[in-house]
Length: 508
Image 1 (spheres, rainbow, N blue to C red):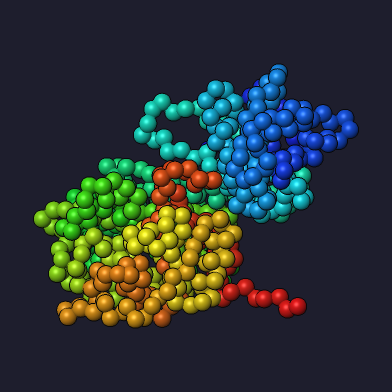
Image 2 (tube, rainbow, N blue to C red):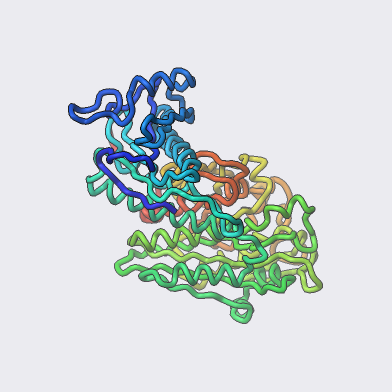
């Protein structure tokens, strides 16, 4: 990933630089370009750029782009991008468009993107700078571990903000860097092919990345420990694979943390064939990404620890490969989970809820959780309901739902609260177990209802990220492939203290 520098003024520009220019409404150019201070020459003639904007129809609408090579190549090139109405989503779009163009030019020798972020309404504040840094790092992300040759990449992104020396802005830039790095790690985990990424490999990556961080301990439960702990769901789902399951438990416990003990549970299915209820080939092609929930909770803990947040948090990732063999679990099997609750298996392709059930119960019974949040690529029904850019949010309390929705707004990741509709609970009935694992439609809601008992009486939320965890194309800071969706939501919630109640309203 490129280094991010935070500057208060435009640096001297050379032939290895790409300069981004935010274009306001009606093609308005920033003051530093249209009316530079005396003795401070503009880096590119404003008249030249204004003419190019007119010729390309760039009136500042969000996402519009004008590329302009500069005589003398100082800077090497200008990329003028519409800033729209200057909201955080439009700022992220401006940054992402500029970064992608600069990465293309990096293949021909450019090494630095100079990225002014002040808007027409005034200097960028902490929120704007953090959003810009995150977008700069994530929009330029590419997974290249299994391809050669690797194209040249930008070495530096220089974010220019007039108030860049303000301690709050400096801290925001640092938070953006940490967040971007953590989400990029989650994307790497998601994008790694499953012939490399088995449960043991995923556990090893968590140990390697997290165990050296201050106040973080990582424990990996293998098959014997899982049997002793009653992880019947994990063992059943992973029983058909030559790669045995694991459960990763990563705990961050800083000194002075308050009494809250949020436990984040992430689905870690490293590949999903569907098991005996096998998927068609087309349905398996993206199944290396079925552990995206696990990657998200690990990344959130990684960022929380690196930022030194004063809240203790534990991430639990039940990791298994749902394979087909003579030892696979079968329809009509009855599985006993952590805590003793039983499930009648009606469909082995409803495996995510089987492992999450163990993780939630373990967090409640053994890890001292005060609140539980799980993240999972759980149901195709959620993609039908909300599309591929919005996650479904289920919660047992309005306060927790509001807190997570607020965190999502700050993170720039979209969620929509869905109903835990009690009228569908009877669909989970089983004649031989406490519930069945495939109660039918509405699929997202019945899956959430299946999980709810494992949280007991604790506040609990469930994020079904089956749509936004994967992307088929680039959009703003999201790139094709694994997105790391959910990590930023959880981190923002932790930064707020993992609240269970909505923020207080301000009296008039």
